[in-house]
Length: 444
Image 1 (cartoon, helix red, strand yellow):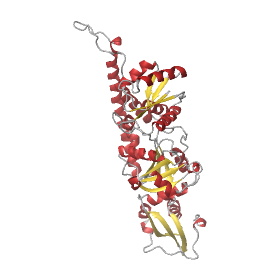
Image 2 (spheres, rainbow, N blue to C red):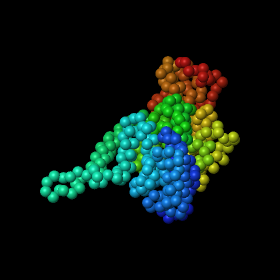
Image 3 (tube, rainbow, N blue to C red):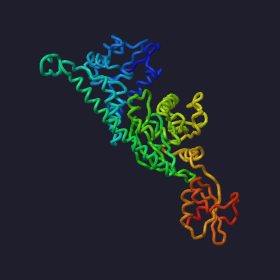
């Protein structure tokens, strides 16, 4: 059973709450389905302020109890955050398990984590959320102390559990610091390559993993469920200019992303903050797409990636009747938010439409290792260097002169420095009629 709540006033209203509680409740239903639950009903209350004891009012609580009993529901999921006291009171009144959106997301993450790092991060988030909610045992499970003057209740099981959880949290933080150091070492090794790192980011279920598979053939899990991908994956990608980059696939964001998750997944989210370019993927066919973009931008600001250049990737255009890229971009980026994006592309990650254009946009806006146009004159027998040019640069024209072979190329600056001794001084030469086409000159 799902329960939504809408505030008509500002008194006691938590920050970040949606102005459309029905839409937020629909999203909660998708989350519940992703967790494997079967939704048997929903209830929505709109009032000026929340009841401090049970969130919903007494009349709605009676109605909710009748709905739960009639449908045979075994768990009630509240969309807004509920306090530990409200959770205890609701469970006593409804006689079923009561959770909220945060606990549901934590449960989904726990079921999707595959790597050791992912499991550590999820467990840390769960324990941080559970610690203030340890209630209900008290003196019934207390232990008596021994000796004179110790006939009181003694140490309660609640206090013991809190100490055990505290020790486990400290151990998890130590393990994650080790993971953080390992990731930092990997980033330094990648920076020495030099290969820029790009990452996909966006609202959950926007099609990030489908796009990632389309670009890299990585074969990561791609599913319509929310948070289908949890553990990040990094693969190499070749751009049209033959520049090579690393592309990372990250976890999706969502409205009211729990702060415990943002803290626990700091090691993973640092991959986003340190990227040279962010591919901000948005489901262009979603009714609330502009709100999704705004929520993702808020999370990027929170993790320190607000200043990283972004390319707006408008996905799922196969679901739209007609596509006006500029009009679509203006509709998704109201106000000053448009200045945070350095490019845009409309694509369909499913059928590959627009993906080539996206790669061209990335090539144009990626400032790392810029392209230059120049001419190299190689000995005719230097097949290794000629192969390197065909592999890592765009060969525009080829010309044979005596014992030498001249290549007019668009080449990354880093490769130009490596081959400086073969570079011809002066401007690139215009193409001549006897120039050999690139496609027919790959064999040296």
